[in-house]
Length: 200
Length: 249
Image (tube, rainbow over all chains, first blue to last red; front, side):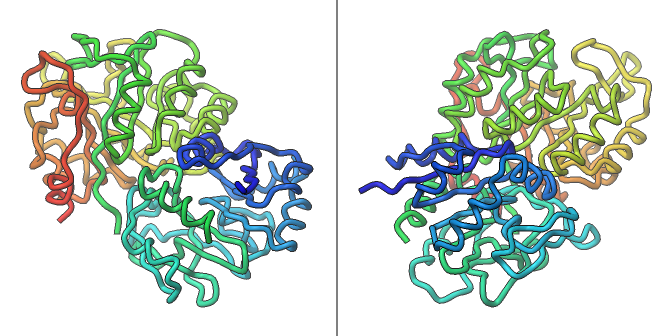
């Protein structure tokens, strides 16, 4: 049986690229902001492009905070992409709003003095946790575009990437996953990522 | 680490993909949806799309159709004037919206857009062209005229805005495949503090290696990836994996 996949639509970009890539691997998904459909789904993908406060504001406007928190507490498999991952933390240097508090950490800003403060382009990922199912990340490269980062965290970080400092590029807590890169824009590596994620 | 990006650029006019030479002579290349599909299948690092039609608004329908064919990052510029436009195009799956003339005309709008959509969603493009006394100036491609500001001032303004990247196009070399103006690139790359990508004149992979050694983020090209041999036959192509490895090592 195919899993029911919901891609959350909250006016912060990127939704069609994700559903297009999922259909490429024969997975059906719905793009939705309807709490009923979200409640009924088995996998939730939370995208995000833009700024931290704007993303939270849009989730609030669409009354999506409660249903997302409910699904998180029910242990539904969730994937936050880019800003969609960052808003699962406590908050960010980028804004004043509170995050969804799955990950007990704050997002920080890259420092312009020693690195480009916007990390953009293709980078590899290095697995930090000894879990065989993530091995494919060591042989992948993905597309990144971000200014704020999820710091390395002993409990959550599955894989890191580097912009002079090591930051989290894949994180996990129970059934909640987050990726800093854009698998939906990372052609074959992205396709491979989604295949692995759905089957984990 | 981040890899050097090699980026095909597509110019669209009235729903056709065209190739210009020095932004003037135009050659028809084909259907943009189809060309994006091919580039995406070739696994290019990113695609820049620039609509140069004389229209007041972006061609949203076409932009949506294009993005549905792409599994690689997309950047779009042309006719974007409002937050609504930006939001719509980002929602189609474009990563970055690129501005050029509005940076001169409505600086405050760009400042606000960067605040609203985040630095990483906005990029800025600058055209440089020599005037009749061979002095390099800021060029307005739509109006075919020069701006009064000095290049240095304008680039400092962009540094202040801190967009995701700056695209510098050398108009006199655009479409010529005659190699980069290395002196000018070295000069301006020292001023620009954002990610920088260069367009105009790319001829061979050594050009890209030159950019990479200057710590420039990427090279943009269209002729190089549009034609086979001389400018006569259209063949959408990209670098081989070996060539890409050579650049990144």
